[in-house]
Image (cartoon, rainbow, N blue to C red; front, side, top):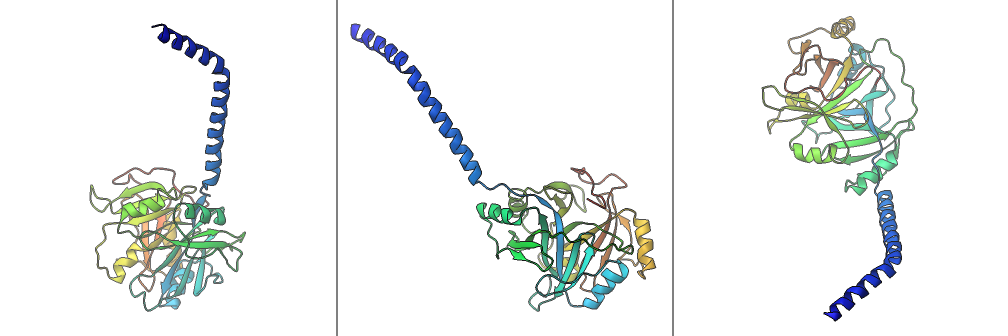
Length: 323
C-alpha cells in the first residue's frame, strides 16, 4: 500500500516538476504542427480564376457559308486568324468564334475546342497538374499576345485555357450580339464530367431542365468567377446524324431584345423559316436558333427570362451584355 502511495506521490511530484517543460514542449509541437500545415497549404496550388468563355472553335466544310452567316447576317466583325489551321475568326465583343477546315477523320463532329479565360495561365496549369490533369502541350503564345494551354476533359473534349492579351476588339454597330454567354456539347457520362468541371475547376449549376417533366436533358454549369456557362447536353442517342450533333455542340449569343434582334437579322438579309424562328425555351427565355452550312447551331438567347422556367430555378444572377 505504501508502495502505491509512494508511486502516487512521486507521480504528482513528477507532473508538477515537469509541467512547465511539458507545456513548453507542447507549445513547440503545436507551433511545428501549425507551421507544417501552413507549408503544406503553400505547396498545394490554389486555383486561379476562371472568368468565362474566351472562344469556341469549330470545323467547317463551307467557309463561304460561314462568312455569310457570321459576317453578313449576324453582323460580326472578322478578325485575323491566330490559331494553327484557323481560316476564319469573328469577334463577339471581346470573345470570338473560330473555324478551321474540317479534317476527313472528323466526319460527324464539327466542334474543335472550347476555351475559357483565366487570370493566370501558368498558375492554372500547375494547379491542374497537382490534381492529376496534365496539359497536352506547353503554354503557347499566340500572335495577339495571349497565352494558353490545352487539356482533354473526361469526355475527350479539347479544353483550352487562355490568359488574354490586352486586345481591344472593334466596335461594330451591325453586330447582333457582343456577348457569348454559353457553349454546349454532348455529355455521355455526367459523373465523370462533374469530377472535372465541378470538383476540380469549381463550376457550379446555374439551371437544369428537360424536354419532359422529371427529366434532366440540359445542365448549365457556370464558371466559378463569371456568368458564362457550359451546357451539358444529356440523354442523347448513341448514334447521331450531323444535324443532331450540330444541335448538341453549339454556342449561344446573348441579346437584349429578340424582336429587335430578329428585325436586325432581317435587315441583313436573313429570313425566318420553320426551323429558324424565335420561341420561348424551357428556361423561360426567348431563343432563336440559326445554323451554319455544317448544321452547327448558333443560338440567340435573351439575357433574362420572360416567364418562369421549367424544372428548376436559376441559381445565380442573369448575364448581361457587358459582363
